[in-house]
Image 1 (cartoon, rainbow, N blue to C red):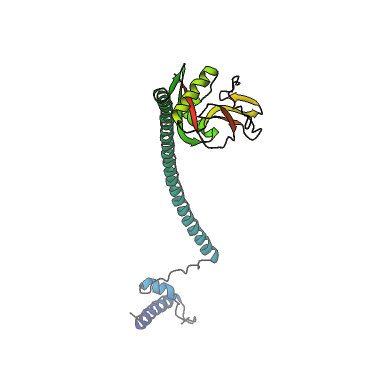
Image 2 (image 1 turned 30 degrees about the vertical axis):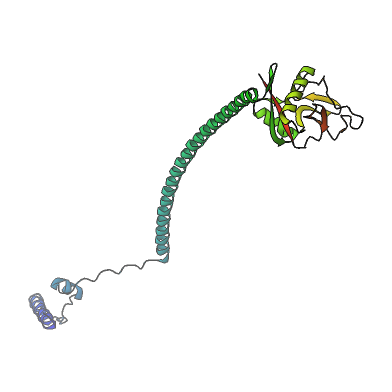
Length: 267
């Protein structure tokens, strides 16, 4: 079916129209020879050989494009924030576990320190006990005291510290009896030489006020008396007392001088 078919159809319809008009029209009436127009679209729809064209769609505006872009970016940001929150939570869990482990380690270190302090105290106590036993076994016992000479050089403060660590104190002869017994022990120990040893006597607190290491006042003295060198003669410079080993006399000396020293222990 093409143009020929359309023409045939038009002619048929014209013939029918003329036939109908001849029957109704009187003689002498003008006859309209113009064929009836048939809409082209109706013919096409009747034939069905021409497809309907789709209605044109309106183009997407710039606003819609921007809106869609912002939505996509927000969605990406939301996913990134979610991943960040997950990572933060994981990190928080690990930090919490690390803090717990550090706390446990700190507790363990505290226990170790306590144990070490106990061991140190026991060691000091054992050392003091050993020092007391050594003082009475190796030294000289005089009444309720035991004296022991240590043949190592120390200053006065160093000797006081060493005697205390051994569970004793620097020798403090209280009267003539103790002084004579101590002088005999020192002389026999160093004979035939003459070596001074520190005693636990000083006037560091006040010049001329001689005190023992336990801060009690000295009431008996054995200063060397000689026309060439009468003791004490050091004034404020020499504040610590030592005993000569040849005769047991006392001399005042500089406290930072290195000498042998004499400790006493409770018997």
